[in-house]
Length: 340
Image (cartoon, rainbow, N blue to C red; front, top):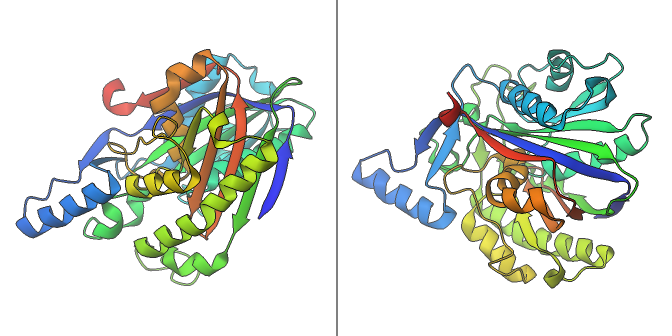
């Protein structure tokens, strides 16, 4: 794996958006289905998921998140030099979501805007790439948008995934600051995992087939327990932190049992480990910033916080970052169910 650092770039704010519709994992009342769902809920901790309407896209949610975030920060939009949109469910094969968002937000034509195709590790990779690029640009502000509408990628009778994945988007504002904590990243990939978590349809090889996400849950579990403790421990060592030094650990919100097993292997206490997917589902690259907004809003708005963040999944791909967040200027969830 690769260890890399970023200096003089900090997160200024986070806004996450949840779609209106709620799908309960206990909605199917047939006896066999109920027994199966009870087992799934017991092992994953996911009772319900938030899903978008058929006509609602990840770009729609991203625009809502960015408008709210920019309003709260009161940023001059001409100062934004970079927009990166991390998603596996873009509105179109081309053009990308980021460049459409640049226009919709009224940003300058000098803004750099592009998409990154990554899933559950996408927030960590996106944070690293956005921070690295921003540090070399003349103006000092950037937007990172992460998330997917995964519910559009499978049929409801595909219980291996339909009971797990929800939809959400998070927008993260980054800015260059002289005096801020160094971010230490540990990043890795292993393409041997490609067959075990894959959307085989709708691309160049099977262009005319309806999307049907496939996941081998056991292979995902084995990969995660094999790679993530090493990634976390390596990251902490290069940061010069012990596990006891961190305030909170927020990992990709995939599965409650998996996160608890990882916490045990790493030595994370129950008080440090954040688990927040129970009523939301696995929201792909949005899951870590969404968990920060859902579970740590009051903390992050008012005090410096030492965080260990780790994302992992499709690819295989994984990344961990250790950083100290200064009090955020914005940290909230926009719940479209309560705001409509």
